[in-house]
Length: 207
Image (cartoon, rainbow, N blue to C red; front, top):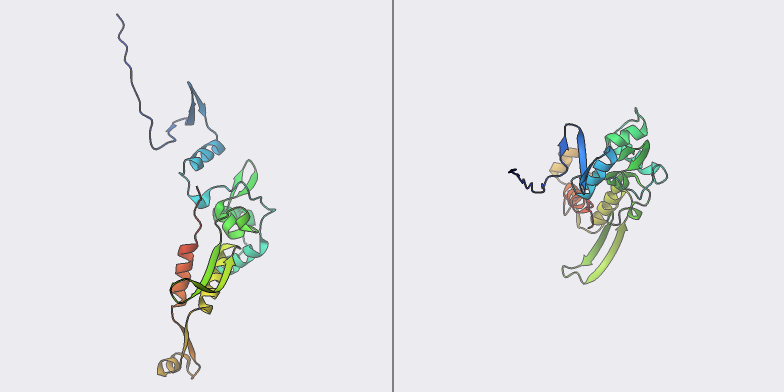
């Protein structure tokens, strides 16, 4: 008489799992070792890679690369081009090298692609100024659909245009500036406006 032991192993929730020899994908009764690109694609499909680090297969590099947006970023971040552009973009998680070909990540599209809404339709800001608080009468609108830095700058300028501004000339201003030059004071501090815009702006994946 032969004894048979049956072991039922439940499917794990934290896939993929690896052995000392790498990662394998179960297909029916067979197990196939996964290469780097297959592992990345599997993780992306499973939502295990952050959205901004996912490869964007629609955008093409360097065809869709915006040189002006890149130069603006270098200037604002005080970054010098002491290394090759592609190497810097990879360090910023804006490019990935796959099969000897450079590919945009979603972060790369948001920062450095021409017409980024062609590749991420949620990459935009719509600004609306209403009359009063009932949101019925629209005074002004602005659609921002360029790179992330330009969008934030344009949205900030729009907000500053439509909030109250006062001018101060007092002893405090005299001490700060050494003369009677007026000091502009926004109803809402600029840093607060900028943080609010950035927090609301950051695109998220559409499912």
